[in-house]
Length: 141
Image (cartoon, rainbow, N blue to C red; front, side, top):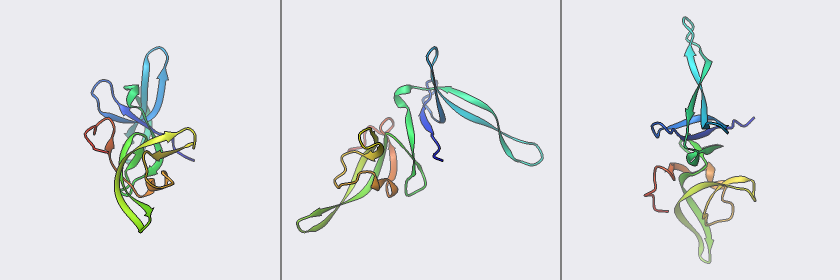
């Protein structure tokens, strides 16, 4: 079963927080994270309670269910780098690309934008997360 996970920036301090998304029509948008406790004696971590962080909903990003080549979780709106290979009249050409991960309603999947070759989702297994559109606005794509 696929784990549905989100991340967003906290309103109080701007730090990223991961967990479940919760929206209250009366009080705002939140990320709910389990608060872990270590039981005395056996050292086993248990989910005892939850922490609720108010977030900036403009920064909400969904985990796409994949990790990059370094094991880092890939979220929607992340900036990823990857080697793209395209066919040319003289054979193949390689290009290092830096692009954003987005959701495509028409195809019903996450992919990278502005991909040179045909399937823009297949590079997600071989990419490297460089940052995201919120923290790394200076990345030249």
